[in-house]
Every structure is written in structure tokens, then in C-alpha cells.
Image 1 (cartoon, helix red, strand yellow):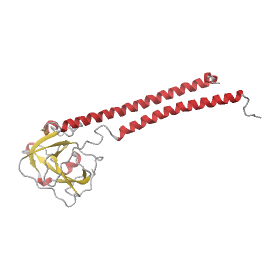
Image 2 (cartoon, one colour):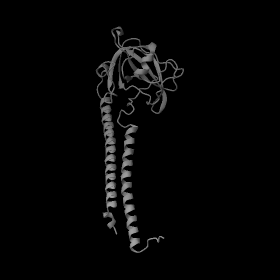
Image 3 (tube, helix red, strand yellow):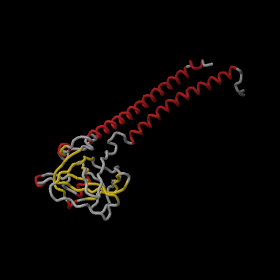
Image 4 (cartoon, one colour):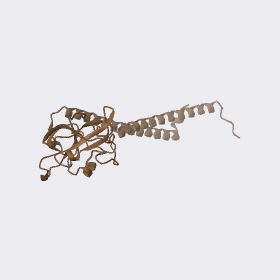
Length: 266
């Protein structure tokens, strides 16, 4: 009944089906390996962040010595110290920031080294978070004398960050903590990252470390790879299903012909 499988037509079709299944399995396995690589990067980033959070504080300049240095997944959350004077005249409120499930705003104050005339740049320090809208609020006063701040290094925000906006805010507010946004309102701030202070004034809450979007290895693209994996494996299974379905139908037709059940044609 299945002798037809040895005909040239079916042999050619079987070869094409096998090749299609092999291609589907190869592409599915490739997409799966890409997903697994991103999961591994995520796990490595989490371990690095956990290790960094528990480590001893290092001078800010060791991690970001100049404006060319960038915050990475290995340095996000690192404890840092820096010394200078707060620039109380240029404080900013950063609205639409969520902490512990509540909406509020950050209080951002530049911390500038003594002797800025020699070329030292200021660092954006978030002195804490407060609940409620930023409209009509003012930043808490700061000490005008020299201070040493201990905090955690944070990555610059982008348009995909939670609460970040491109513009349209009133004076005294900042939509995105990034070099591109800060240069327009705080020309002396010249570093890629910012610092979340560990000690905050009364009425403020410590800002937790925020991993940059996609920087922990598990982005939407990673799950797209997982979806593509499933699609390719389904395609491969469909090819196998259709081959068996067609072969069975051909065998049934051959059996009908052997019994003389072919439809009569004029």
C-alpha cells in the first residue's frame, strides 16, 4: 500500500520535507540559544549588581573619571563617595517617579567640587524622593558648606524609563535625568551617571537603585527570540504533520483503487 513512497515524486517530496524540518529545527535552536544568552547576561548583571550593592564605597572618580566614561551594568548600584558643595541655586524636581508603588518626585541637586574654576564638573545627586505632585513644591534646603555624600551610582535615564518625559515641564522641573537633558539646565553637570544619596533629609525617601532598561539582559527583544523559537518548532511540526497526512491519504486512495472504488469518469 505504501509502495508509492518509492516513486520519484514522493522521494523528492520527502527530501524537501526533511530539509524543511531540519531548517526549522536549526532556526528554532538558534533563536533559543539567543534567548538563553540574554538570560545568562541578565543573571550575570543581577549578580554583579548584588555584589556591587554590598561592596565598600569607592570614590566617584574611580568609576567615572571624566565625561567620556559611561555607566555599565557592572557599575550600576556601586556605592560611591564624593565631596563638594551643593549648588542650592540650581536644584530641580523630577516628577512622575514611582517608589514603593507610589507616585512622587525626585529632588536633584548638583554637587560641585571646590575650585570649579579649575575645570571640575558637578555631579547630579538625587537627595531623595517625596510623595505627591511636583507642582508647587520646593526642594528642601541644603547645607552651603562642604559635604561628603555616600550613595549609589545610577545610569542615565532615557525615553523608555519609567516616568521620563522629553520636555514640556515648567521651570525648575526636569523630565529625564540624562546628560542631554541636564546640559540644557545645568551646564556644569558633565557626567554620564547620577548618584542616589543614601542619607536623605527629613520628609524624603531614599531612591532605590534602578537598572537601566534592557541593561539587565531581559528586554522585550529577548522574549521575541523565545516567540520565534516556538514559531520555528511549530513550523517544523506542521511539515511533519502534513507529510503524514498526505501519505495516509495517498495510501487510502491506493486502497480504494485496489478495491475498484475509483469514481467512474466518462
